[in-house]
Amino acid sequence: MSYGQGGPQQPQWDPWKPHSQQPWNGGGDGETPDWAALAEASEARTKRRRMLFIGGGALATLAVGAAVALAVTSADGSNQAGGDPSSLPPTASIPGETATAPSFAPTSAPPPLNPKDFISSKNKDTAPLGPDILFPGSQLTMGSTVYKKGPTADTTNCASAAKGTLPQALAAGHCTRLMRVTYTQGGIAVTVGVAVFDTDAQAVTAKKAADPKKGTVQPVSGKGVKPFCNGAVCRSTVNSYGRYAYFTLTGFTDGKNVTMKDTKIFATGDDLAEFAFRQIARRGEAQASAAANG
Image 1 (cartoon, rainbow, N blue to C red):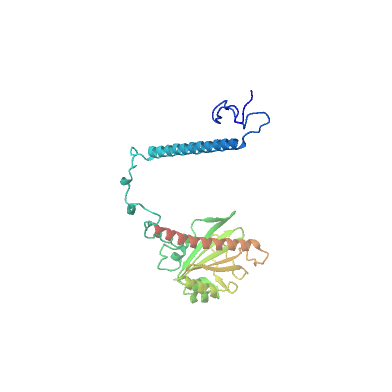
Image 2 (cartoon, helix red, strand yellow):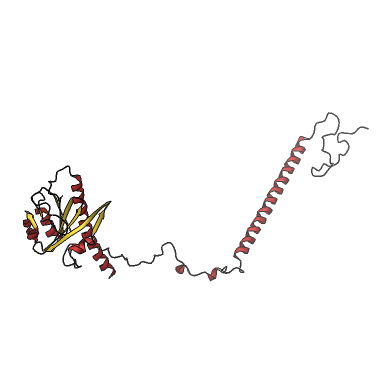
């Protein structure tokens, strides 16, 4: 059976219909496909897929938006306390970053009392005073050395208890009292003298005027302590603290001269000078503490 130019009628090809056949020009052997029809069909498929993709994306976006709206409604719905915007306080009543912090009047504790102030003037230094108060007990221990306390002396005539050039130095500072005490250890004796002045400036004046090589306190003997430093070479020191000047005179009880090799003499004098300083300092500390607690 032969067919004319039109040929037998081919079934209509639908690219979206399963098992439909692609159209061919003439449908006979050696004939080529209808490329124009194929291109149109491909373009139609592409457009349809694009429309399906756009439509699916829009539906997905709507679904996400609905989910977010639902979450917001659940979190801030009217069933939550304070969820109603009208219940918020006005803007002016909400503290912001520029809110001013409350200010308080500055306070400060009073400065601590200075113990030295209480021993720098007779107006503040009013506690009881005497040789047995400054040097109590029957002995004292400095480090590992024990010193036995001997006789004491107390006078308001400062010059009578000094020798050499010291009386003039005491007078320059207007000394009002001179207390002395002697300690012994082995064959060594030391007399400690504490001169009292009205002010610390007067005590400094006396200390500067005193020369340990030319004048010192008179040694105190008796009560088992032999006379010492009467004509023999002895070692003497001078210093001051507050309104007090303190002196030491150290020598051998057998009258032997002190030399630079006698280190024990120097250690004994330094110990007693240190003890005198500590006792004067404690006097100031006790009065400062009493004033602070009173």
